[in-house]
Image: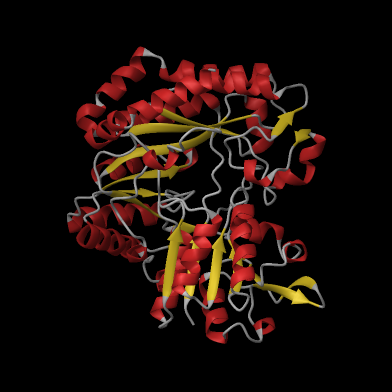
Length: 472
């Protein structure tokens, strides 16, 4: 059996404008790369079409599939990319009905077996972690799938789950993701602009799951447990990327890189011992960092720490996540800066319960923090998130899947309008970045992140065109 994985783009860019997002931020599809590596480990040929790296029309993707002639095509889809992936599945079934079509990823896991009732061009869904399930599906040749845990299939015409697939207990048993299946890796891929000191760079996920219950987070794939790779495994992963691909910086894309203190401390110790000249970024929760840990991170090559702050309104924060005193947030961020690392804050606009006053408190709060950079997303109620169950009681929700990519206000809290949210969103970005302190910080990127400056200047015409379009 030959397996081809497709990673649909699900682009929803401004009409008439060139999509420049992947120029400045394109990370490998680590989920399907891990599954592909497991298949190859067991002698099953695998290929990957990453439509983020090489955007293609649905018709062009089908032509490429026909040329490759796989036995199974697997689609890894978010909510926003699902319909794009399904369009490919429809066209493929018309051309090659014998090819087995499978969908996995966040949207399939969230919606569950009932998804098959409305989308006949899909044969199966993979529910939960995909490595072992896809392996057994390929080994079975698509036969007797009712015996394979983690598969949704049609029974008497209705979507049915075979059985729940147990989570992988020891993540160290997995091979490293199949980076070699990405054409143009690592040159075609890059971390977000100004978030790295050097290139080539890439991302790593060294843990799965999260024990917290934030209202806006979908845990349908990896559940709420927390499992992780050992420090030794992580070091070997980085060493492989460095020696084979020349990687000089990595981003740990884990939700909770610093959750297990002993693991992080041992990782820092091993990295220093090995002398790996690879810097890194990570995401941390404020309650998991202290002075001693920050010094360890810095000494082992940490360049930037990202924190999910979400809101500067205490009542909004309490409603949606574990509360952390807003005064303490500033103190922790200052500790990171004093330790010699950059600090990035992650915020949301349009959460249930917000009004203009609450959003303005968030903007003012963000400007008061010692942050070098922010990322502001437009709140999106994904079907697998706890808040989804009551979302229509809290405002107006346009459940238009292609728009559900955190770039559109599909949810409008009671008492607000879309125009109001867009205005506040633009004001947030403008007020934060049009400050002298931030300008000086980016000036320092001339020597701190020269590759980012070169990429920025090379694509300056497209950036200016986008800014003009947004003003109009």
